[in-house]
Length: 401
Ligand code: SF4
Ligand code: SF4
Image 1 (tube, protein in one colour):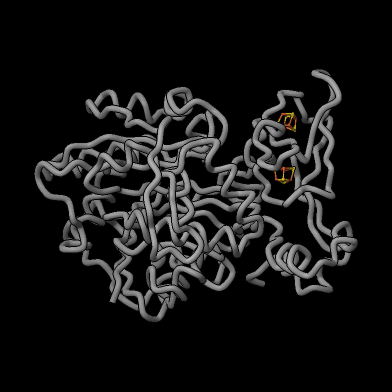
Image 2: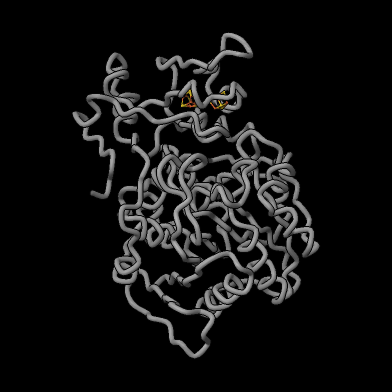
């Protein structure tokens, strides 16, 4: 039975995070595959150049504690990620990860270039462009953030691995897999190829609402870890109030055998007070532990996936405006930076500004609703507007309730 270890962690003070990580590592025991001399790549969420308080990126205190625990086992570490449109060094610096890494002598891995690898077992990804820094490592330790996501509803361990594909190549995958289910299948294939040794999720302060970049920080007070990224996402999603079926990567990851999404078939080990070594953890089916940790009124993004699949696969394009949720820009909040236009993966772009001082406008006829523009907007100026008749196609704007 897969195991997910969960440790309470009230804040990002180093001693609290280190105690939580020690508890997680102790609970996972033989699930931890990190031997002396092994080259392990740490893969935090470096979505964008945002300060740690914004909760858009993995907190440096979590990065530091996991790195120290792995180094103590003799692992040789590197780190890296491919942000949406920004430079990795800048994102690492602003998010505090670069300083944490430099203090521990952990170099940034090569993420600007990639190699094409064959993956014949893949369901939708038969060939994958993977960052060289990932391929040069013996294994990968995944450090996702507990956040909502406009396209995927929730982004966790499986989705975090998308950053192992370098920048512009990620945009191509968005175009090739335009709806959430297709995109979820692609992410699951990628995770099946990468097989992270371990995933440690930063849920001390997560993000709710308009995630993964412009939502509101929400204190969750937990760190979670597992060798099974699907099980980890299933448990984290349940704590956010989402059943496994509501998150494509979790549902598909369970269906395809990448991992276990059935909460009754996952063992959860919960440390209520990791700083007290005498306090025994609670061990129970994850369904029960997650119920006890449920974050009340956690705000989800507006889900879009069921309608996008219908409209893009049945030829009823004339209905798009009525049934598909869509991104919209609030001119009052827009700084005219153009990041949304640069992030748009369609060719030609589905949004453009008439001039450098103008707010970009959308062409909803070509927009595939990937929400990369919303993800990359540094001003939080892009909202998701609900379609008036989305409910006719079974759109569940709030999957859990
Ligand atoms: S306009 Fe936004 S949602 Fe539409 S395709 Fe471009 S990035 Fe995706
Ligand atoms: S909507 Fe956001 S990303 Fe786009 S130009 Fe305005 S501020 Fe920049």
